[in-house]
Length: 555
RNA sequence: GCGCCUGUAGCUCAGUCGGACAGAGCAACGGACUUCUAAUCCGUCGGUCGCAGGUUCGAAUCCUGCCAGGCGCGCCA
Image (cartoon, rainbow, N blue to C red; front, side, top):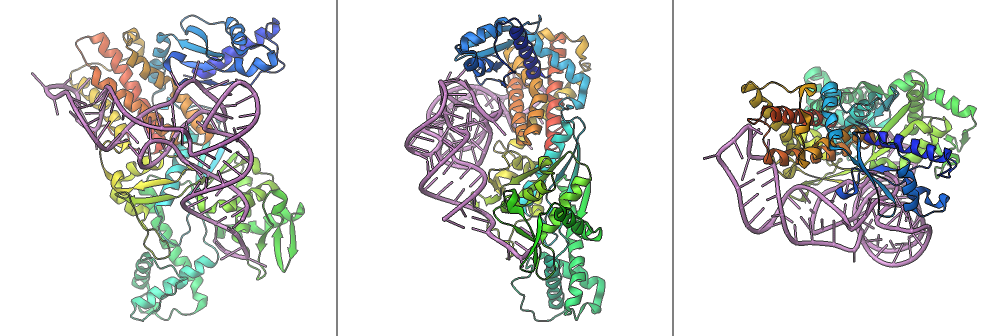
């Protein structure tokens, strides 16, 4: 149900009519808000339009509100009353019966209740994780993975055609370094004494890569000293590591539609193409033996090198080409998800986007870092020394659902504390089980109903007026507002709103469950309550689906 | 030094991009299982929204300046 939208139309029509009749004076429709008030006494919805208009009307807000309210044409069975309150709010109180309609709607839509066509089928690409293939994913990548995946689900629910993409940085010096690291580990494995260099990747996972390599190549594996072979070794290691990354992501419930290789940009000549495009518009220049992009023209603090003195292109050059390529693929909206440690890079990419006139479509979301705790004590995380906690370890220890739920219960721009001990506890301190339990509880009620031979409720044949308790109305309101919660979350690119909505809905259900029985001697009442329970279960499952968290039938 | 993010209850965090007396969970304390699952419920306690100014009918939210924490400031990726 789209109650806000309905009220907005009602008010807009009232304003127009008021203007035509000369009761209201304004030139264009003012921007106003309709919100759900915190206080129940303030109605189901409140509108601030009178306060917004007061100054141009040159009358007190409450007086303006009276005029507007008097001009509203309200059909029967929808609005119970309209009040002017406070500084000039127009408060709307809906008829109880109105909320009950939602149950029929949910039953009719089934699993798709909560989906909308807001996006109008526009194509959007969400690029996320995109971790370098030089080591396993750590917990920070996990947050990005959970967020990106949930965001993609959310946008899909809101009517966008979504594609998930992972960008693989498989070009450049880091691959050479990876190759060197592998060479050292292989020689070490074959008995050579190695003083392992500090600038190499030191994590233990490289020892595993080396072991696999030796197993495949046997004795020939020795004598890996030639610099020429390092690139090949690097590619070998990168491929093996990427396979591990894919596996971790799959076990985390994250599946990509495409894996885009940086090397592909060069194979297709896209980097040179993007240079040509920028050169055409006069935004490239040579200086000090290097090629520069005039990013300072577009808000960056200085110009940036795209091709170095030694002839090698920079990471930035790849990224320009990559985004030009995304643009050419015809997306209406591009979302890049980056770790917050890359935030200094935003202005220069946005500058490039602007130069290539795709800025309006590009959204860069920064996901803040995760600090890992155990029993409230920080866990040391240093990538170079190799003592970091991998996503795999977190998955094994706390499980997919708990990890995802925690990642998705924070705004992306706030740092997150992830306590392993809290996350793996299966108790009240862990809200994921609270929500899942609500779903499982309803499933249990339906099992019970089935075993007693009670028929599944049909909305059309149900006496909905039996749902007259205040607690029931509260649940109905939440269900009715859900589609607009989804739209709002999608519009703001904020999946955590779904998490909070679900926690509240689960709370209302638990409370209701404790006070009242779904199944009773009163067959008519039983049908009505089962229908309500079915609605709650459906919405819980839908929301959990967006988060990528299981909705269990039993726990 | 400059830039970005954050600062809300003892702890972890929401606060619908300016709205009506500031919200939730946990912790603490006190209660509720002969029930469709107690992984639950009910109640109590708890806040100068970092500090100081400003903008207006109205500020946790916007602006300015401080303070504190995190991150970033390469012809690295």
